[in-house]
Amino acid sequence: MKPNLEEIEAVIFDMDGVLIDSEPLWKIAMHEVFASIGSRLTKKDFQKTVGLRIDEVVHFWHHHENWQHISPKKIEQNIINKMVELITQNAQPLIGVKETLVYLKKQNKKIGLATSSYRILIDTVLKELEIAHFFDCTHTAEAEELGKPHPAVYLTVAKNLAVSPLKCLVIEDSLNGIISAKAARMKVVCIPEKTHLPDSRLSLADFQYPTMKDLLMSWD
Image (cartoon, rainbow, N blue to C red; front, top):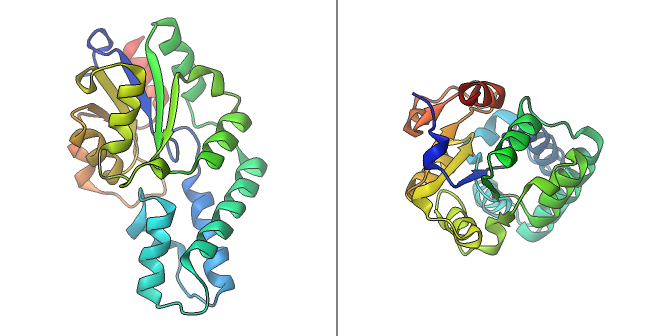
């Protein structure tokens, strides 16, 4: 069974782990910044907060570690600054990304982006990958009261694209993202991010492929 593009008017992409292999970069940035304030958290610990907004991640660990000498906002800004640096140095699209975007444009599908990452990171990724022109709408959960797994970011993108959520297909890599899209009543393709621990709960998605190239091949 494959996603039926004839029933789909818009395809909405997550960003981290879907367009770009940024999850390892997030772990590097968080590890470096947390270590700079004396934390002994490891990259493996960060699996607990995959898919959350960075402010939610920082608040989680700030409370967990009981850091008293630095504000969550300062930690968050340091991580974002490090991410911009790392993306600029290491940006590469994941396999099949550009080919899939070209294919969807030829099929006259609207294309959206709904991510937990902040606007500055959206702009950095799309610029470095040279794919900004493919997207009809990009939106960050930074602008929503609640991030994923709440469906707000996906519902806003559908509204901005003037497409019913029932006519949207989402491409995600994490459990929180899948829950977010399903709560928005959208069909979901899961392409599991390779650094995530195996999680049988990803079967909540309607479809699953090893890479975006495999998804594209199912349509060709």
